[in-house]
Length: 598
Image (cartoon, rainbow, N blue to C red; front, side, top):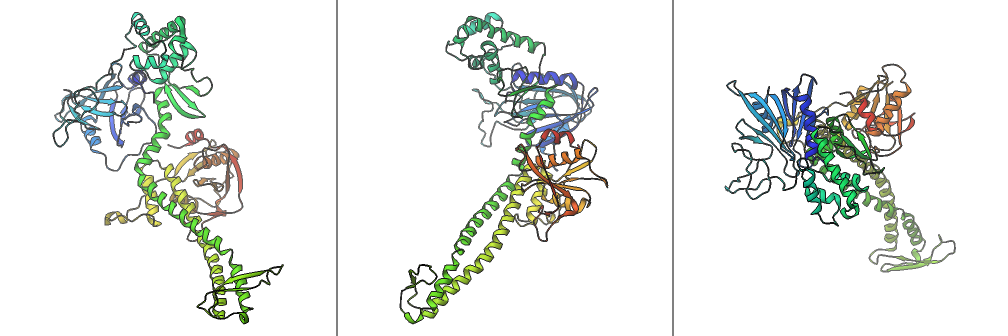
């Protein structure tokens, strides 16, 4: 992601404007690599500042996304609360041309004296960290410790010749910088010297990336595109005028950054966020859409929302995904074997006919025969047939054996048909569980799914007696239609059963994607007739919270709840319904965000 040093400077410039002087109200650590500071500001009210040290997506910005906190805060969070609760944010700064953000606070120590605390976010790929320092620059603690191991040897942290120790009590040292030119300090003469020394065959964007620090590949491609009309243009193809334009663009970039003229831009392809930057871009030429945002924080919230949620679910629900996937694969193999056995029973009439032929030919048979050749009176042309016999059996026993095999195949067909139906229902259920895991928004939702799998026998019950009777219950997602009607969406099978079978009234409207795994959606009519707008929006939500959310048109069945029944012994979330109508709608994630009740 292009969260380069210049983009970071734009975010810090934006945050400094509104957060200077803010008070730390609460501190949370919803994930292993992220900390949220709840701040009270003078002009913006109560806000939440997210500092993420996720190696794949390091960043800091204000967030409005719902982040679920663990029941027991991690040790780093407890230490932050001890040293930072009630602290006042003095300023946010950035190490020049580095992806290192420094938040300087004024706090009170145990004696009530005012002391300085610094929180440092190193947003460097594969070396990300969040470090808390005291006023003297000593490390109080950090998200990722590095340095001396148990044997006393030193571990390199951040590259360079000398190891960098990140341990409590040690003085903090900045990560080693990159030996590149600073595009914000180089004058025109220096830029011309660097360009004249560049290989003529080099691509302009590659030369920019290798020569100057703080520039992302996206930004280098954009500068090359502005200078030569193509992102992959070579320096010799630019010519003197094009090279002069390239240097002009570098100077304009310096002036823009120096003046704080940042423009948050998100780049999307087919409606999906792909990149972001801090200035207008034109290199995609219709392949992608570049949208301007009013501020960096809402843009970064929208950009990382889906990825972060999927990461949290994948990280915290990995055991669930593995268990359900293994169970689903076992059921698939079982169904495949049963289908083969069922196909074999379709030839059972041949066994009965062979038995009939043997019965009518006892006079030609005697014990010890291995084969009988006789006329097949079932064949319209009266051709002969050869029937295999067991030499150890009598003629009557051989005929009885074929009748017995026929009856066994007939019974197997009945049993296999029943077993296959059960297996397919089980497979549908397991697929629905995998789908609900993807909808989970936090640990509480995953715990409820884990509880459901325990109740259905797919997971073992907790070994500790104190956990055996403990029940977890999370709430369904709540929405409001444009006309004010309440809409509830189940996030898992337990919530689907609760909504449909217990909470909803008979006159409320039930929605579900047709023959596609998805959430149960209830439109609460409050005793009246629902309007068409609310019906349409509830159907769109049912399509969005389903396995078909990436489709363009999705069939959604809807009917009053009184026509929805749960068969006896059915798995959680499984129902049958009658007297329904079907609406074809397009899933819309933006509408879901707009209608969501927070």
